[in-house]
Image (cartoon, rainbow, N blue to C red):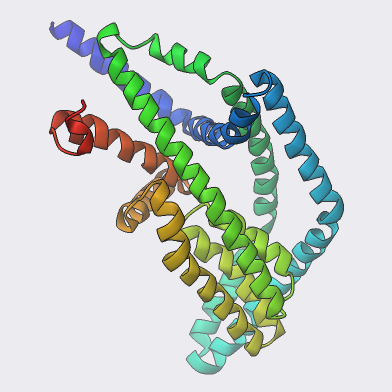
Length: 330
């Protein structure tokens, strides 16, 4: 008995070490699952009329065609706006440094200068990071396509590792996870689309340069609640700062208005009908995963918290403690 316990603990320790060494691959795999859930909406509808494999190919073809069309029509404008943003950021930092030097003395100005120099130092690594991120995105896309093409095959494979007595528990847990992720993905895609569109239109109406690129940044930033929203607003404020103080106020007003709409309209009507996560829990999870895994951890934090919250609710609260609406059914 002692030997068996020791071997189990040793195996668990080895599994934890291997998981830590492969943490980036595991995060990418989880993102692949999320992408597979995204694909499941159009693929599930098309599979009613055709084989599922053909439906996946059609969805991928439409996606790649949309990307190609966007590259033809919007890539030149976005590229120009990226170059404008790259040139405007140092000017905005220099302006902020001068403003601080006039009001706070030389020490703060020197600190701002060091920040600007540091930003220049990380420019090349950031570019390499973009290339690496693009490669990872392709891998995640392919993984999501494979998962959505034959989801039952992978589910049965994992289910075969579960003891027969626990198979009903596995089936219910899997069904709840799939339901929660589908609802969250549907809600976040709607939220991202609305936020990106509102930000782009608002910045365009306010006369802010590069409004299309800034709207795209807001779209992707919305995927990471709170933190992503703040991060995606910084480039817009920098661009507006290089135009004038009035444009800076306009941009700040647009971002504030967009996030008020998100907090009081989109979140109550869209996200709470999907999966409700308490803000304190979400921020704590984002901070913890970002500290452990870096930016990828912050990106996957929300869907991962959705999964953990769903499993804790079912396995612990309902089955173990006998509380909750599903306790009577379990």
